[in-house]
Amino acid sequence: MAEKVLAAVKTGVQVTELREFDMPDVPGDGAILKMEIGGICGSDVKNYKKPIENVIMGHENVGMVWKAGKKFKERKGVEEGDRILLEHYLPCMRCEWCHLGEYRHCHHTDWHTNPGAIRYGYTSADTAPHLWGGFSQYLFMPWNAVVHKLPDNVTSELAGIATPLANGIQWALYEAGIGYGSVVLIQGPGQQGLAQIVSCKQAGADIIIITGTSKDAKRLKLAKELGADYTIDVQAEDPLEKILDITKGIGVDVSIDCTAGAGTAAMLLGIAALKRKAGKLIIQGNEMPNFPDFPIYRVTQKYAQLISARGHNYKSCELAIKQLASHRFPLEKAITHTYGLNDIHTALEAVAGKVSPDVIHVSVAPWLDSA
Image (cartoon, rainbow, N blue to C red):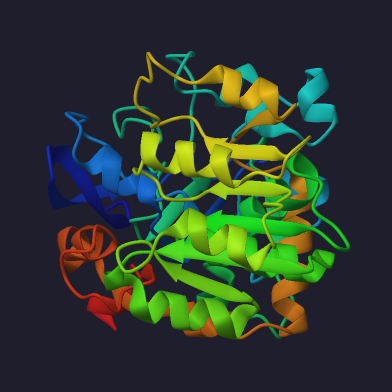
């Protein structure tokens, strides 16, 4: 009898069920990952509410190479037993973007525009060999899987936040160009906003300001520990007035929107808070609502740049792992909740803020229920 793999499958709007799948065969250029930790991000919460069926969610995946073909081991430089961070992209490895390590721009990874794209956490379990998400005991890794070996001093739990940290490095360093002397506004103290703090601090930013709401008290406290210079509760004080007071009326060099839902309010604050000339506004565009009366003149008057933030490249992941290995920042404090496959619904509700105000980063440990 074939070995079975247990996975949590999204079967409808905010509904999951446990299913068993056959363990895939391992081709010479493929491998099987034994899952250890799957992180949950805001996009998982949004997709959980959508009428998407038969998907094993989970795209921030850490595990051990359980079985691997000879060619896979040669190409990826890994051996069975190695712990790795697995990126969610499965690129073509032929286009110019792939050669640059910018897999997020490869047509083969863009499930928004390419119906045939296979991507961890988003692809139907009907697509053989079925195991395309981290909320499962095992994952299938084809020849084009993008893997990063983990050092011994980075636990799997800590590596579970490598993906948001890589996004932080990508957006802050590469997209925004933050460096020595920068003045930065970060909107939203979730795992992504906290990752931006670490990236900005490491890059040498002079002033880091982060905003949140009253329910974000624990997150704002951790933001200070990670290096934020000022925290602002937007429900208790006027954020623009406070920002201008901190910056002596000049404003910030860069505003990074990590609110994942504040929409126009965050956009308008970001524009208003930018310095008088040539600032940068970094936004996450995937879930941004329509803005028919967008005041583009406010952007052009300030000679500001509007930059889309999406995903990360290969180098950002490598730098994120190095940052975790340095243990310079107490990022382990951001890991607050861990659930097994039986509690996927609760885990997603926790990230949505419906379980506890103390939730920051939530992990799924697929073997927890069977330990």
